[in-house]
Image (cartoon, rainbow, N blue to C red; front, top):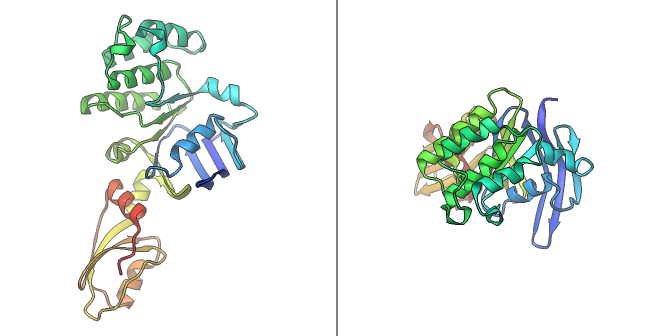
Length: 293
């Protein structure tokens, strides 16, 4: 089994939004960053993976299992972390740990103790008085100590300072170093995603814009700056998105897998310069995608 999560033709209809048809592949042993603007469908897709809601079409397989027929097995082998999770009913950190530990035979007490120290938590801490960032660390601890085969994180760095972010991602890297565990992260912190994820998928309006290895996806595009003296209009086309125009000076996104650069030259573009992009630059360009008149 090469893939931890496979989504094929997934559709979910709402009155004002449609997810899909969505195809998405998360390789086993990867840290996969799922990115997109607010309302793109990231959380909806994650909820459906865990059986929260009924699909209107398509299939989701997690560790080779159908997400509906094997919901219990999947929840035993996969863990979920979100800022919306609330453990305050257990009062103290130690009580929450003891409760959750009872449900998972693979719970690792030694690893739990290591995480407690790394995250600055103790058994006697009152959950209600923890900072938002500390509550996120507790949620991560309760998920990681289970030693899940898949860890799905929805905005896991919310409320964390830079040092805490480093600690969290260090633990995530350790979690996948054996090649048998997988992490799926949905986050708006694109610099973190680019630094730590090795695969990325980008969603817009409920559909996948692109997906692949992080290095290949980022290297695929370039920012093109060029001049046009003959007032030739440049419009969006396959592999070419106009981003900005200032009289005869243009900026555009070019997909190097297409003939966009050659097309520019045939249209009379001059002094073409190409610049590498960060994941955030690429995200903004693809999500914005507004044609300059």
